[in-house]
Length: 376
Image (cartoon, rainbow, N blue to C red; front, top):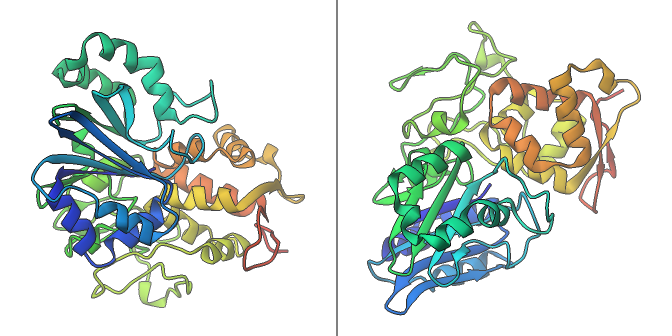
């Protein structure tokens, strides 16, 4: 699902290089390409790389100008198309003059060419012709508003050869210390913002200075970006009188005590595998709620879904059958899109994953070659 950061180049550079653990955190979640763009006297400068490791990624960040020009940088997690330089952001809208970065999953997809990303298709199908005829269109308030309505839960950043920047769905991101981040789910904001806490399994009927959260149907980005505070999700296994002290959290690093500023730990592949094997729907719900792109893409990259003999697709309601089909097809973008629409969808995805499918390993990993999703 990616991450875009915008701001003064020197500020972006120092924040990424000097904040302990931040580069590691961002690169781990978004390892499929880095690109940046900024204006120069000779026009728009675009630089991209496919780093092989954190060292490569850090060296690339050191190439950012150490001055006050405006810059946009994109860290990619592949959801559509190949992982290659062509699909690494930013993309040309007008070659050499206007480029664009995207964060999210576009409903327009990439059916015409599966090797190309949804962003590439969107530019070719909707933007290139119009913007080539009128380059300033991307700065027109009416056109931007129309794009925002059309793309929904997605963020764009445009820049021209003069370094003029335009955000689309700016409000879906968060601002901190004169920097803009396109989301809070593709990195751990608490590394940079000590007061930020992610939701944990303490989610049911949570009340804080930011208000009460009780609505199952919500827009994920609104909930995360309304403030830097917690607006956590409701976890189905809990009720209002649940004794949390009696709950034994799995040894997967999900929950961290309140005095630990990181608040939430990203699961390792072994953790995800164990959760599937143990049919731990509650834990899977939390991971799908907190980091849907990471959880879904990691599982579908590592495992292949297969039917179980003792639970059947026909037993599911029609919406859950669609989720079942997407998981069987390995359609990461479709499942991610569903997971970010409502908590009810998250619950359904977790239950289908754990109760209706088994998961066969696609490549050698450190655990058994077949992980049944329901223990017998």
